[in-house]
Length: 261
Image 1 (cartoon, rainbow, N blue to C red):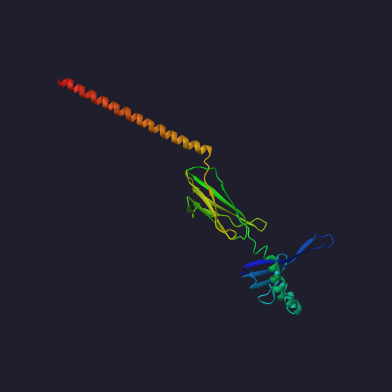
Image 2 (cartoon, rainbow, N blue to C red):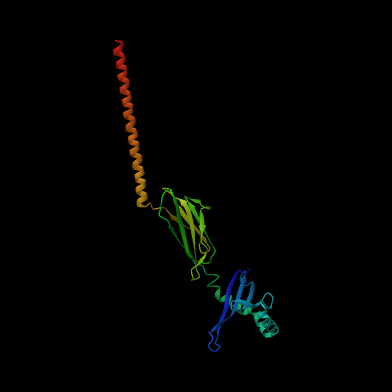
């Protein structure tokens, strides 16, 4: 496995052949060179591949030190190039002349480059208290691509309800990732998206508290008002019942006294 892989050369040739009035046929001949770095420049591997119509037919591997055919189409090139001492030595020397040389040039911009992530939290569904909600933590603009994103609810790390997108390249040497939390939200809950990345001296934490919508707020107020009114009716009914019962008890006592006299 290569710790870092850098493609340093790509040549693409398209040949159009016209035969009389027949339509043009395209033949794609491609040469790719690739440098693989493991532990910096301590262990470097150079690979050169020859491809015809998207099929690799012969390649050079610096770990082996010679050309190797992949298909029968590559056999003539394998036999010929392995006999060309100058060409073979130049291919072997590419580990230093191409790979290590370009590593030093690209290292400040690629290997040493660090870009801090931007973090934003969005509730991707309409907020509905007591029901499932989907909260997404958008993290973008970071480099290198290794990153850890964690969701916390009321200070406790969430696990089973968390899903994540694949690591997405932005096309500008930066990356982004979307980490979703599916959860029920109660009044007073707080949420935190915590990001750990090599560009940060300490983890970055972005807090989010649900902004109760007007409809949810109205539902909550309606429930509170209903509860208060219901409680009042119960209390009034209980008072009326107790007074009525007390009046009936007095009336019964007075009747009994009259009968006894």
